[in-house]
Image (cartoon, rainbow, N blue to C red; front, side):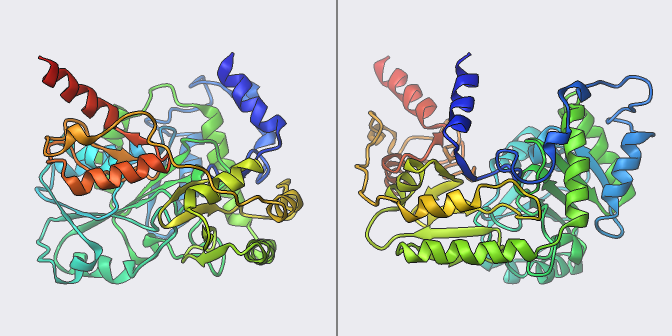
Length: 415
């Protein structure tokens, strides 16, 4: 069992998580309380996630209390499921979607499935953009890198024009968990918000919740959740949502900010530049003498696994430290103290992308993570795109779609 050996090997090597999911190798929260025997199904007394009326509805009701005026529905297929269902539901009622830069690939997949008209704009264009009545604006907040912006005024502007705002808050389930953390878009009356409970809270991967302000829209979204979500939802994932929500409600941040300060000081003692993000649970790291890839390799050599790396830096997703957590914080500090910063040699991974210049992209090209498309299907692949692609490959960033495009045009050229 190769996958089993790979994962248990990483645990045997005492790997330290600075990536999602938020339980950090089961060292944050109380996932150990969930027994494999709890993996049940929709038997008498355990309700039906697709039309809840009992214990699952009561759990949804507790989730709804997170923000006044919202109706919540938990999901086991991740935020992608919520985005697909939301866009599909809204496409039946609205003619135009406005996509703010930085949207996840699932947004474009949903638009493609719904055959919905959309226009992409930058964040800077929002203030002067001619929004119209009925527009649906889709925005990612906070960003993958932990950046925030004036979401309050954006929502107010769109609402003043008669539009709706859908917020992909995949990396914001911990918003408002305590003073010092970002405010959720739901604090400013977003119309639909989808949160990944598993990314920053201690829940199992694929644990997500969709929040809606309008009951009729909620019913419409539920229809398409039924279409896109598995008909056999995992009770383990749902239990983890219940646990993560209790963690959120009861969280005390004092230990988090104290340990975060100690960690930042330890990084800076090694001449690592720490860029403070708007979300205190994200840190962006650089070293003045080596590339981001080399810095990531130096962490990985110590079995410290970051979330991702790019030209901007190495991204850490911090644990939500709490009393009684089992996170190996002292080991983390010790390993940072002995890191070796000898650089790695970039490699292209054995193939050239030159044949793609001026070709039509036949499958979206997407660096992952974070999953934001670089070239959309149907666009012309330019020399500038290829420079970015080559750079990503040299820095060992996974790129979805690149091999499919290369193989397609190799086959075409061979005919």
